Image 1: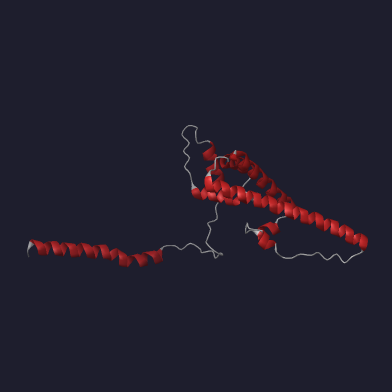
Image 2 (image 1 turned 180 degrees about the vertical axis):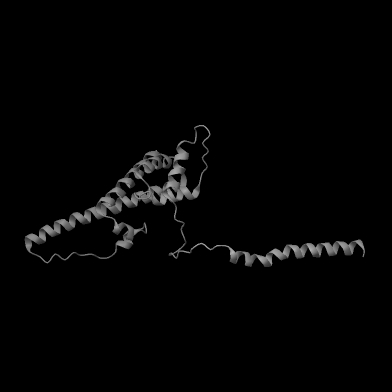
Length: 195
């Protein structure tokens, strides 16, 4: 066998070795433990532990101290921004640190957070106005001995661009007010940082 034939044989052998794991890979994938798949509308979201987000903010707050290493994490930031109005996920102390963190936002994210907060404030004010009107109508109906039918056009979903109308409807009055207060704090913070 010439040296060229030896080289060709070595190349074929190397090529077979490279192809062998590829054929075995599907078997390995089947043996791997499968994680449960949750069916959701749209894309899947990982359920994040709120303590992870609190730890991220704590590391950010103490980033200039000693050996504490903080690294930007887009997923943690997105989760915090997405859930900052939910008091059961973002505690009061975490929210306070989050407001400090958000004061440093720039660009499109800052604009999006401001728009979202503004929409939540407007939604609450509209709801509050609707509640006041409903009370007045009930008082007038009691005096006029009317039938008390409340007119509802059913267009709440169209008015709510936040896409969380079900969650909003499930909140009691107290939690709606809490969300409003948080949105107001964020809105004021973002506007103050614009100037």
